[in-house]
Image (tube, rainbow, N blue to C red; front, side, top):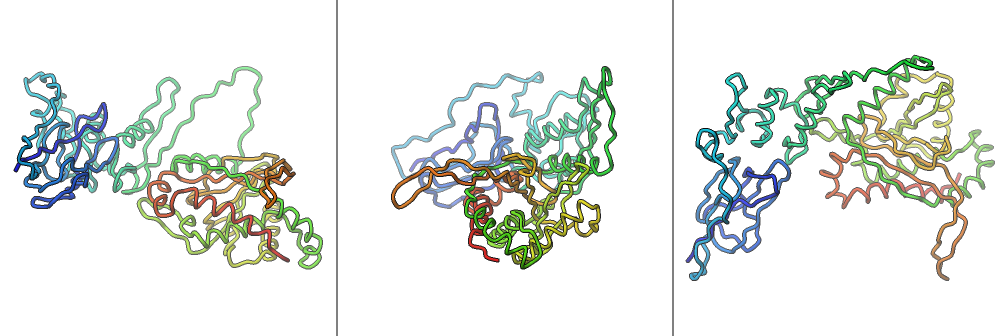
Length: 451
């Protein structure tokens, strides 16, 4: 029998230690070759460590939440190979001694944070047992050096495993908190509840009024729109995906039925209610896109309330909401869309008619744009932009082979919060593209709609 020494692996060039999150195998357990034996965390990545040998775990040298230097032996595995010699940790360069003659490992405190030669006025490091979340040694040291209190640290939204605050999270927070040199712009952090993003209010840099300029004061609505968009970008890390869709069948169908539709329902049918019906159907198939994020909670909206961005004569935008859009047929959607759009332009909307949206559609094609990158209308999780419909040559697959034909094509773009989407929902729904494609391609199903 021989013993194999499992060492803490090196996870990157700048990583000198890692924290044991969970022992998957305990003393006495059998472990197979390449089977996960422990889960570890660094300030850059969380990872599973596979066993390089098959055998029996005979000793665990460190407990969960212990921080261990790279190259240290963390467990002993008994193998059946009698010829095998006990394996030691790979040779590592001896670290330079500290000013007090101790090595970095010897200078480690009992709470896992490295002690530093700082003045007595420096706050004590935040212990790993303090607070409601786990903090790695590097995060604790940064918090200590930047005078971040435990309460302030608890308010930072973490992007790591189980909401853990990573090095990137705390550095981003510091960038937002501290004064930006050179332009007089400051950012002040507002305390937030546990698990919610830290709200930051900025003072804009001074603008020079030299030269030939005209000062136009923003109206109240424009100010609110600007504040809402800045807030949305701060709350949600946006990413936008694009799909080009062949809407020839929808265009031909509308041209065929628009006169009869208007005569029957006394309403002019546009593309907007067609798109809204398609999206409402797709949301019913994939309800997890119809959500809001509240800290670490996912709020699933049972009602499908579609907001539609409408341009006002003043140049501003407003988003009236179609409540229960999935419960309305095409005629009902057309009547509601036309009514809300007309009253929006006449400034006659009621307060409740611009609240409660769960998903938003904006038509950038109104301005001649073929595509856009919309900003999420918080607290929703996604927004879709509809581009202008253009005639373009496109390849069609037929039973006689591929041909090039003139088709009505349109770009659709969807912006969504990648922070929670990719980490939490991507695995469940086989990737973000399946959800986006399903929502966008729901439009094509409307080619079979009848009046």
